[in-house]
Length: 115
Image 1: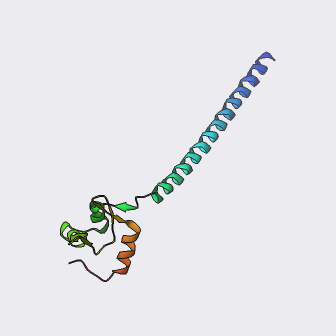
Image 2: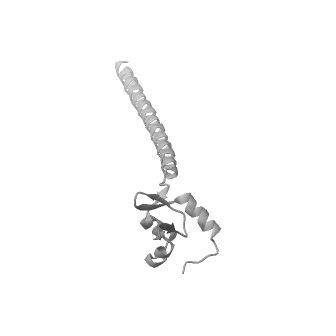
Image 3: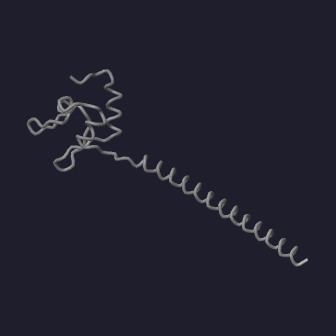
């Protein structure tokens, strides 16, 4: 009888250990899924927080232009008047190019080629 009770106790202990392991694994999976979903939402937020202004090097890469082509469209100062084929913002001595304005400019001048 004593053997039978010890055997039952050991089986019960084993089942309790298995149940606890299953509960812990389930909780860890839920936590990992929640973290993954949080990372995805943070990634979406980061995508939306892209820079709104580009410098001339970023503009060159954005448009896929060579140095010569970029030079043709960058703002030039002539007789205290800055002329440009492309929308820009001047901050201090630097020219910056708003991404949305560049996209709109590209749409409007779709047929024009850079020579």
